[in-house]
Image (cartoon, rainbow, N blue to C red; front, side, top):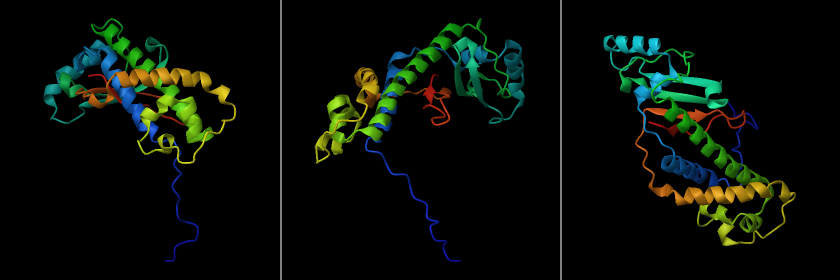
Length: 234
């Protein structure tokens, strides 16, 4: 069959500062790893997320189920009052705690659980970190649409730490300064982003070794940016 004319798909064109986003993720994970206290276990998380009678029943049944059956719980919690309206998706390897995975929709936050305060604080702290790096992402998105490499270098000197060594930002290869339109609309976020990037660099992002693998959360954002990176809490 002849190929239909015009049927070839074209890949979206890369933006000038897209390389920065992977390094923003890396800085975000470094700040999370260095600053969020996570001294709780999978069993603590299970007792926090589900009512006692559910956890007890699933724990009692665990010994009768062959390995690998229903051992990972995945659910989404939307607008949780206990978390100040935060929405997130989580994945928990409940096998580590010796229980079966509850069906979705069974989450009822147990504020009287032994590790409730620590888990709730870890979620709050992680959410704050994610929101702060959202400012950096907003600035890079704006620069992608509105600034030359020369203008970005002038207004955001710290952006260079997020870009490859041979990027036009560093090389000054004719991509000269040109005043961006409506720069005042983003300048306040640029100041905040500079401090956030500096904090991330201080957290030694090249030497992060998070061995947690049993419980992670992802924050639900918007239609255009549906979920955050995964943050492993334990």
